[in-house]
Length: 113
Image 1 (cartoon, rainbow, N blue to C red):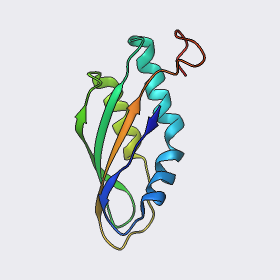
Image 2: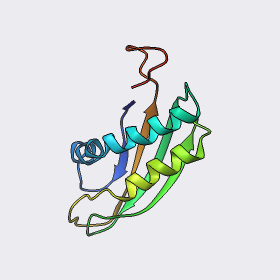
Image 3: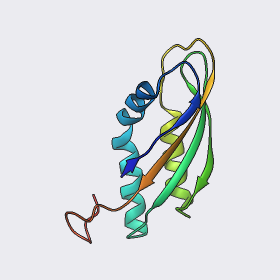
C-alpha cells in the first residue's frame, strides 16, 4: 500500500502530516489485510478529507472519492484517521489525503502484504 501527494489549508507542513499518517500506517494496513480476507485482490484508491481542530484532534472524516467499493475497509480507515493527533495548531484546518491500496505481488500472488 502506498500514498501520493496531499492537499490542505493550514500552517502545518506536508511532511508533518505525512509523519502522523505514517505512524498510523500499520493499523491502516491491518484494515486492508482484513478486507483482503473477504475479497482477495481488492485494490483501489480512497481519498479522505478530515478536519483538524486547534487541539490537533480530528473532528470529522469524510470520503471524497473511492474506487474500492468496499464500505468496511473505508470505515476502518476513517476510524483510524479519527484517532490521529496533529498537536496544537494556530487554527483549524482540513487535510485531503489519498490512500492507494494494492496487494503486494512481489512475494506471492496469493499472499498480499
